Each structure stands twice: as structure tokens, then as C-alpha cells.
Image (cartoon, helix red, strand yellow):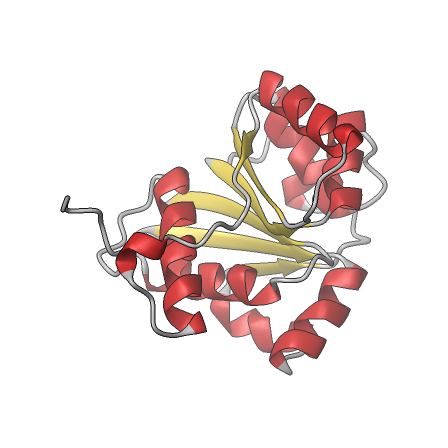
Length: 187
């Protein structure tokens, strides 16, 4: 069983994190652990109408953000990769600075110190020099910075198609096969 930790922070784009855990649920041999920040809960409800408890059925374990003693807070708990989708600037900055005041940032710190794949779907625009320097620092630390960017070559007709394509990219970055993702086939 391949284990993944997914974080959802308070940035706009909660549907991306929701769709990612839905797709991971459909994948064979995958176990998903989810942690959502308090602002993430508010954004999830505002943008999707869902409560955090509605996501329980989609994951193997839903960890309370304040439960700093959870399994995912320790390097001895083995997981393959972590993705924070979406990732707020506050969460990105806390991860870069090693600030582990909640379970999401602690799990990300574990991923970094254990040399596990960490993907941040930073959701902000425009970016100022401080944001860019923080992203460069994280990239130097081995973090994959993957802001949601629509793939227009797929000729999307709906927001759902844009979301699905982007989530397919996150599945690729996690190393999980996903046949639903449209691939570039050339012109």
C-alpha cells in the first residue's frame, strides 16, 4: 500500500484538494491521510458547500490539524509523498521557515527532513519578490512548486475539465497512474 499525505490550506482552490483526494480514493493500492487547516475548512465550505466531515469517506485517515502527535507528525511513519493542494502563502512561508505550529506544517517538515517528495500547489497571484525568494528557497530544499496552471492545449470547455487536468498533473507528480488525465499528443 502506497501512503500519501494530502494537506488542504486556506488558499482559494479547495476544489483542487477535494478532487485530488477523490482521485486518490479511486487509485489502486493507495492509502491517503488528510489534514486541513482551519482556514482550509472555511474555504472548503465557502467554495464547495462541504464540511470537513464530508471528506472523511474519501480518505483512510482524517487528522485534526491541532493533533501534533498524529502518526504523520513523525519521521518513523512512512509515507511516500505529501502534497499541499491548495497551498496558501502563509503555509508555504511556514514550511520554508520550519515553523511547525500545526499538523500540516509539521507533516511537511517531516517530508523535508526525511527527503520525501513534497509538492506545494501555491495559489497566489501576482507574486512579489518575497514570495518568489521563498519559492526558490523551497525549490533548493527539494520541494516541487506546482501552482495550478490551466493546460489550454486540452481545449477545456468547463471549469471541471480545468480542475481535472490540473489534478492529473498532481497525480503525475505523486507518481500515481491516472488514466483520466488528458495527455499532449502533439499537433
